[in-house]
Image 1 (cartoon, rainbow, N blue to C red):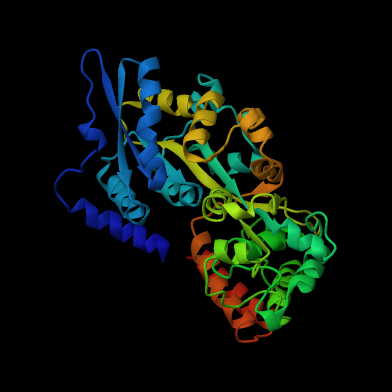
Image 2: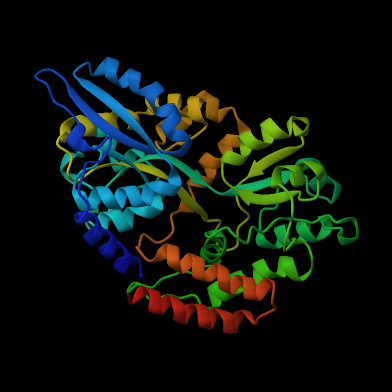
Length: 412
């Protein structure tokens, strides 16, 4: 369906006349100055112009124009750019979008430039981040910032049930959640986010599942995956996780209704800002393990648009954004976690126990499979899981159905 949608969008867009605001055709090269256009999304687009001035000071022959694209419009705008071959010079790419746009030949292969720009070297980044930059035999992006999932927990409440440290295994997590839950007081042990696309796949990997075999056949009805779904469902079955929380997670954490949850780095600032009275009563920890404690890796990369007329300037800009010095400054400005390993040695991260955890978890973090169909597969899983935790469907039978649907999606 996605392939059909992409093809239709491309064909339709070819029929549209007109020009695109902020596109590469609007970039300019005078005798002494080049202007490149950078498309950035969300909060990043608001902060990027501030750091661009540093790049322009170092490169007085290059001007950078940042165009802010709302996340909910970004996908369609990129499709239009691909179809018209008129777009930015540099694009922020969410890691899950890489397969779709790389397969549409929208992203420049950076392999020939890795030797020229040492900032692009694979050794600079965590292995999981590097996975997100590759499509077939090409390198189509450079990691910009990363996120991964860790355990947030109330240290004071865990101590009350005998845990002076965060749970370190699946068994301990299960035990702590049971002890913390007090259904009669409307209190739970943990929040299992049923809208989180990566959660079950993350736990399945922890239980030894490969998700897909070497031929990209799904393994969702195999023992390792089914056991992980049963484990997640067990929190709902005994009431230690709410099916519908009905309130903001920060306030639930603050009030002790939810003393544990799994989420990304953005929650650190939200808790500090919205629940300052919790200072000293909460912490972050790497995920509890089964066979391993693999977490989900996300974030954004920077890519060069295939049809740029200013390739050298675009590559220079990405190299600048990838340097450890720039990455630390970007983190201070935006709270985005750096993708380069050297930046993680900065004092600001090493002395902050809340953020330091994310660097430790990055050693065991992997992106979801880099295939075009993954988002549709993940959405399909959420529907199956709802039948299990809400409707009481048999886990093995529902995973058989889900696996068959996934095979169909992958065959498109």
